[in-house]
Image 1: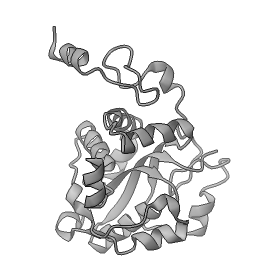
Image 2: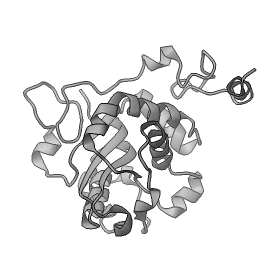
Image 3: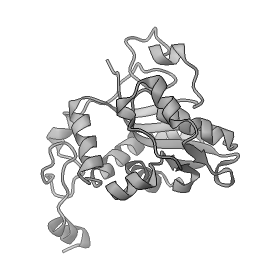
Length: 236
């Protein structure tokens, strides 16, 4: 009996969608649950990667109206009820093993695009130390580690620090979110200067978190900033 088989028996993997033990054993997701996921499909916004209505639209409404510090981003899933439930399980019920699937799926689906970015580092969006203590981990960091192992790109969690506790973003408007984060995130110049960076996070809603982190990295001398997320709001 192989070590992997023993581990599958002792610690059976659970599906990130239904929460049940995956079949076949050791799979990252149930085949039937995989089909329930709403993957982001083209055409997408050239800037944030959000689905747009048709190919005549180069940018989504938000990116057409506002400039962004980041180069462009990629997203795996539309943030529907299935994705919302799965991400909530990760963040609030310590189902971090689900990130093995999402990190692998992001890496496989977007490997060519990520290689084309020529990034030097994967940098997870940070959480404040008090939130990390309460949750026990930073989901963006775990996601980045899965992607880093798959893509063989270094991960640098210390590149960004959230040194000031902020209000929960979900309770704020887009403008309030960016103001809430302004000055709360600091980048380490020694780790980021001259580097091309791929920011990693779980959800892109208004983009304020990615924007604040991108600005901090660029102010610290990063050459360019891209981003990758599991979920994107506002799809078709």
